[in-house]
Amino acid sequence: MISLPARLRLRAVMTAMIGLTAAAMASAAYAGPMATGGITSQPIGHYEFCQANQAECSVRPADRGPTRMTPELWDMLVEVSAEVNAAVKPMSDLEIYGKEEVWTYPDNGVGDCEDYVLEKRRQLHAMGVSLSNLLITVVRKPDGEGHAVLTVRTSKGDFVLDNLRDDVRSWEQTGYRFLKRQASNHTGRWVSIRDDQQVLVGSVQ
Image (cartoon, rainbow, N blue to C red; front, top):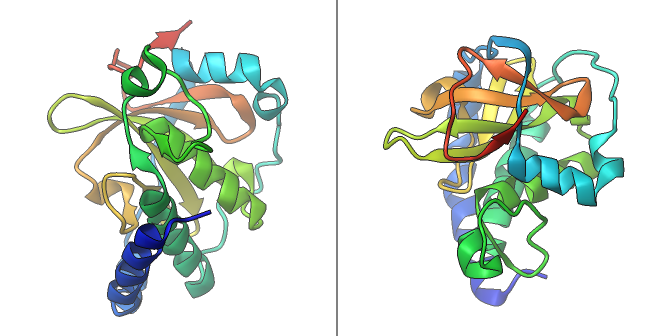
């Protein structure tokens, strides 16, 4: 349940974004896909999430290619991203659980970047988007800090849903360095993007 302040913030965000949808859809035509590499290490937080949620990490979705971008899909991405951002209060794992790298759904109304990603992924999948096109992704921010976002593969390119901003952007427009993401054909495996360097989001081999 979204609180009243969160609903008011969401309404303001969505009102502001209605006028941006046409321009954003036009620019979406110029987005491109990420170039992925081979199988790579799984973030430690995702590994532990999978130990607790094995059914979620053993799905092998049929990869039939990127989902078709439509105005309806675009609106859905924008709405889900803004809604989850408004509903979840940002807090670190250390503040919530007393330890780092706890990946879980933010059902208690608080979470960090990975938790936002999991919730957006859950909601979009429930709306009919294939898990093969909803990929948890690890990036490095310009300040060098590790971060997680949701990548949505579409026929107009790869787009990012981010808890640090409400709008949906092409991955090329984020300013992030993309390192690894879930494989499109196995929810428990990860593939590299460009090079595969150690980031603050820990990994297991």
